[in-house]
Image 1 (cartoon, rainbow, N blue to C red):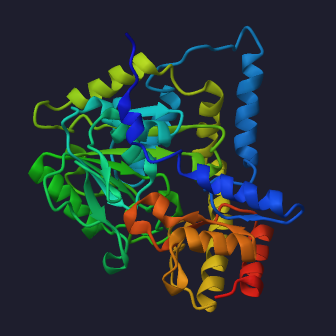
Image 2: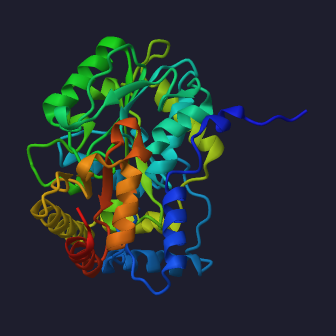
Length: 407
C-alpha cells in the first residue's frame, strides 16, 4: 500500500509567498484600478543584456541545423562553462579543478537537494531569519521533529538580530550541516572574513560541513568583504558553495547556476573525494544537465562584455536600494541592508507585527513587501523590501509611503 511522506505535513502552510499573493489579490479585487507597487518577491525586472541575448540566439540557431545540433550534455555541465567558472574563481586567487564544479538549473534546486548526500541523522543549523528552502528541504527529508513555538524540534537555530548585525551567531550546540547565506536573504547583511573564519574553524573542529549560498556576492561593492567561502583558509575541507546567474545577470527565468564540492571536503565517515563522488552520482542519476541554451547564456555572462553588462544591471538595482534606504531613513524608519545586497530589512514602527505592517503598507501606500516572520521567528517585527524593481515603480512607491502611510 502506498503512503504519503508525512514530513510534508510538518511544513507551515503554503510556500512563503502564497499568503502574500492572496492578500494582494484580495486588495486588488476590492480596489479595482489601484496601482500596486511590488517590492516583495525578489524577481528581476530588467531585460537580459545584449551579449547574453546574442549568446542565447546563437545556440538556438545551432539547434536548428543538423550539423550543429546537440542533445544531452555532460551531467556535470558543459566543460567550457566549468572552465570559465574556474577562471572566474582564479581571479579571486581560488583554484578549483573542473571536477569540483557542477552546473545546475539554479541555486534553489541545489540548495534543496544538496543535503541528500548526507545522513538523515545529520544535525542541521540554520540562520533565523532564513531563506525557506534550507529549512523546508530538511523538514521534508525528515531531519526535524514537530513545529512548536515557532521552531522545529531538532534544528539548531542561529539568531540573526540587531545585536549581532544580522550575521548568524555560531551554533551553541553540535551541528553537522550549517547553512550560511552571505549576502544574507532576507536581512541584506554580509559576513566579514573574521566572521566566516569563525564558522570555518567551528566546522573543522566539529567535522561539520558549511553549505554556503553565494547567490548575491556580485552585489558586494566593499572590497574588504569576502565573495566566496573559499577565501577563508581551510574552507575547502569543510564547505560547499552554491551560486547562480539569476540575480547577477537576470537569469531567474533562464535558470542556470553551479555548485562547488571540493575534493578536499571530508566528513566523519568519508575520505577526501567521497562527497564529490556522491554529488556527481546524485546529479547523474536525477539530473540531465543544464539547458544547452542557458549554458550558452552563462558563457556570455562570463565574457568580458557580458561581465561589464551584468555590472550595469547590478548598479541599476543597487541604485534602487540606495533610494529606498535613504527615503525610508528620512522618514525615521530603522533600515538595514541595501549597501552590499539587493534587500532592505525594515523594522516595523510602534511594535507592529510583520503582518500588520504588511497590511498597513498595502492598504495605505499600496506597496507590497514580504513579512519578516515568513523567514523565521527572529524575523518578526520586520519586513523585507526587494530592490529588483523598475526605477519608476521604486520612485512611486517611496512617494506613496511618504504621502500616504500613517506612522
